[in-house]
Length: 344
Ligand code: KG4
Ligand code: ZN
Image 1 (tube, rainbow, N blue to C red):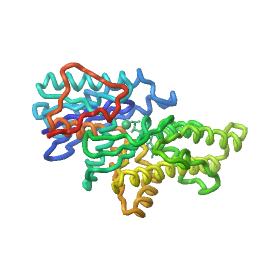
Image 2 (cartoon, rainbow, N blue to C red):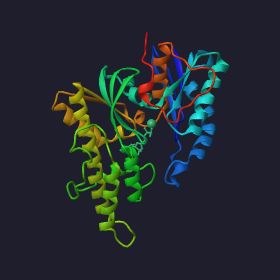
Image 3 (cartoon, rainbow, N blue to C red):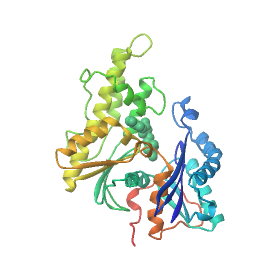
């Protein structure tokens, strides 16, 4: 089965063709970062309009790159939520209509399930069951995963998501949007140990997270060292970035270890934009090795939003006979636990 995947939930237009026998044939991504950067964050209406502009040329490109004619497409998978409603509607209307026109089934995919399954596209994929840490711009969740569609939420952020915290810290340090990768790069020049930031909610039981206090801590540290332009000197900014990243990473590592202990599992999958963070990968690998555990993640380009994960997740659901109705339905908020399991 050959599936065209479409991702438009936020500020990336992603398309891909996944073949259940041959694997991923081609993928294309257009990032709207430049469009939104002057506003310091995503402007929903601009995002929707840009998806309209980019989707068709990208689909033509990916079909050609996969040496595939529309007649060879067996189904279309599109992100149906969660995400920005206008942006979701563009991909869903487009995908649903293409499938109708081509006379093939369509399926609406849960964006976070896409992220969660992305590591399965790698050559050495994790096997079920496992614990997943989903860390993106909108989500920070620990999920007990028994199989596809068998998700139990173990804990989540009670306020900001980890990626959101990175983006806010970046803004305070006068870095561009999205700030996560820029904070990570600045942190590489930081002096370890000059600042010590708190590891929120790690001193009490439970698997929930809170990152908003770290935001305040970052702001007060910046203010305490600020010069005339409102910012500390370059080295101090790097030292703050280091301390901030270390605090987020340690907090995530502590909770992942706790989730594995609590569920008696040894396999951890990390997914979503923040799973691209090198320090997080390093520290998780090191920490899990001590308990004989293993951490899996997607290749760098499939950690952040992309069409490949949607084509792949959609293919799994289509193989199990699940399809979308003719109407176009999107879900800006959508609890992953409500997804049906795959019943073959
Ligand atoms: O999964 P994603 O592309 O979009 C959402 O579904 O939200 O995640 C984007 C988030 C942004 O907050 C971005 O700053 C963060 O992932 N991010 C990172 C890194 N790369 C992306 N955060 C920390 N370190 C990185 N290397
Ligand atoms: Zn995402």
